[in-house]
Amino acid sequence: LKSWISTPKMMDQKGALRPYQIDACARAWDFIAKADPSSGRSMRRLFSSPTGTGKGTMTLAIQDALEKANKRTLIVTPSLDIARSLLTRQGVTEAEAAGVGKLAKLAASAGITTPTRLANQLRSGSLPSMPDVILYDEAHMAVFSNSASGDILASLPYTPVIGWTATPFRG
Image 1 (cartoon, one colour):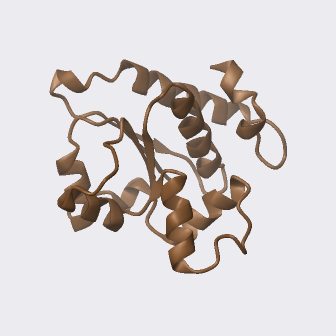
Image 2 (cartoon, rainbow, N blue to C red):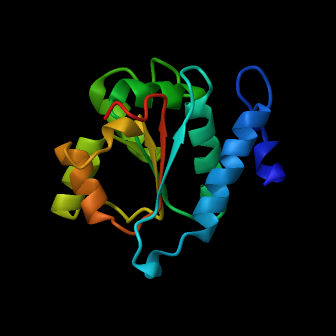
Image 3 (cartoon, rainbow, N blue to C red):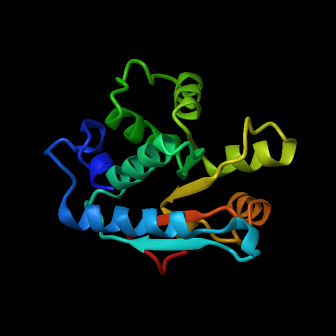
């Protein structure tokens, strides 16, 4: 765990992940490592962290670690604006992400999508490959009453989902 946390990609703009971020990433990693899709049990974990504590940074750190472990990971975020922010942290410039079409393609290539896009891909069978793990940003919006999120959760009931939110009781 410490080896991937200390890599340059795991650093935020001010330096290494903070101790509480390392702890949250380790807990998420442990949850995912113990997940057993064949168990027939839903595998969801919600992490609540106040605004400004680096949930996006933690999400990107976990995605990077999972990709190094050959796990297909999708980050689901409620808007392309948040996707743009995550891409910027990965070194994409504003000019490269200008326009919705270019932004959506860049996001898709980085394993970032919106609930509506993912739900549509699941319905149509056009998702390139099924994710091993879903990292859900603004997870308070990922409720069954939200049709896109409900479709995702119903379609992938045994896929481990890590949710991040600052407002866990809002949705």
